[in-house]
Amino acid sequence: MRKDYDERIGRLEEMLKKGNAVFFGGAGVSTESGVPDFRSSGGIFSSKYDYPPETILSHTFFYNKTDVFFDFYKKFMMPLSARPNAAHVTLARLEDKGLLNAVVTQNIDGLHQAAGSKNVLELHGSIHRNTCVKCGKKYDAAYVAGSDGVPRCSCGGVIKPDVVLYGEPLPSDVFERAEEEIARADTLIVGGTSLNVYPAAGLVTLFRGKNLVLINKTPLHAFGATLVFDEPIAETFSRLRP
Image 1 (spheres, rainbow, N blue to C red):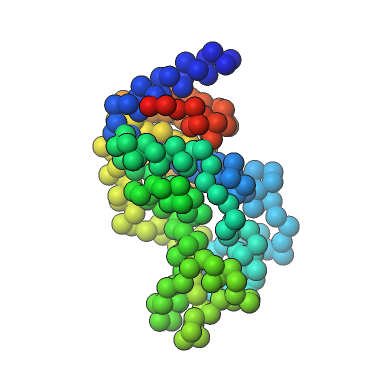
Image 2: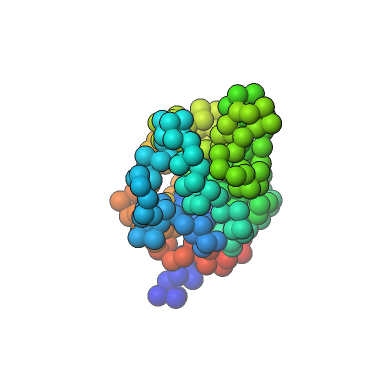
């Protein structure tokens, strides 16, 4: 198994050396940084609460039961102590070397930027950007996390996190840029996602390049990948030396 793993690592390194690659990632990229995912047995959606998490994290619930929303959001959606792992760090290094064009992510934790990645397309927004719904003033995550109850602006308005809630569309400008990056890439690496969340998962169907690489604990062979890893994503990236 280790020999096979080494061979696959070598093949991935050769693909990356040719450049024009894009990474598309999900919650599994950050779980090794201690950030819980959503749907696993120990994930956020398994939390015991008075309302289903999918209901709490909805546009309607945010405006109708704002206090309950923030009680949940601050407890489960703001991993401010998390730090980038080897996957985040390696992706930033690949971009710096001109081998990776962009990171397309479904995550909202900002760990890719913390690791040094610059062209990060956040499909679901970010906990680090927050805006008053009344006057538009901007606030950081520390302000929201440190607030007592519902975070409020100096004008008195409620501060809304810049994250895509259920019932809200993905940011069209970011989505369009992601479409463009994936469509023109020669290598697409999909990591830490089961590709079950749409419309984001549909981006993979736009890929027309040579190499589709899947890195996920549950292999996604059905997508006709060139290369598949079911080993931990941080370990896999830590072994790359392109």
